[in-house]
Structure formats: C-alpha cells, structure tokens
Length: 113
Image 1 (tube, rainbow, N blue to C red):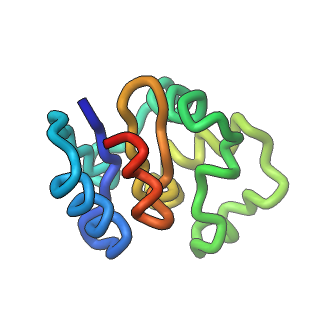
Image 2: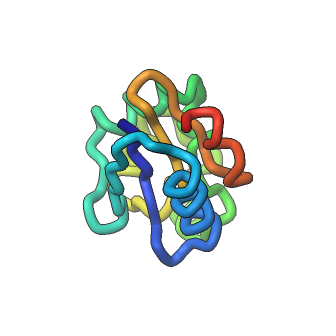
C-alpha cells in the first residue's frame, strides 16, 4: 500500500498522484495533510522513513518559515512547527511503509511503485 501526503492545490503533488495512479497497482491512501495535520508521531515516522532531518522535510521558502523565525530552530521546534503549520511540510511525500520519498521531481516516487 502506498500513502501520498498530498496537497491538491500543488501542481507537483497532483503530478505525483497521477504518476502513481498510472504506474502502480498498489492500493493508495491519500492524506490531505492540510486538512488532517500530521501528529508528532506521524512526522517522526516520515522523517525516519525519509532518513532525513526535519529541516530537509520543510518548505523553507514559505513566508511562515521566516515569520516563525525557524532558521535557527532545533529539530523539536521544527517538528512542532510542522504540526502547527502543515503548509511548511514539503510536498508531496509518498510512503510504502518501509521507505518514503519526496516527490520533487514527481518521478522520484516511481521507485516505490
């Protein structure tokens, strides 16, 4: 089963979803994380599956990143910021439960299909 953490307003997220639907026979779960914000546990699980630091899973060019003064924040503060401001989470993220990939470019996720 694949899970896509999806923002339907994002063109890259829509392209990634379309690629998955065209190239995978796996069951697909779509999580619109802006409507259902991720919990701390969910974010930490994704970070583990991505093998990255919180800053690498964030949209650092968003105005909210600068407004919240996150440039020098520690990992716990960054995770809290992603929980409270889901717009800061990089998109899309696709996971098969064992591994996760950020779909930038969208073709990256084909490895999970």
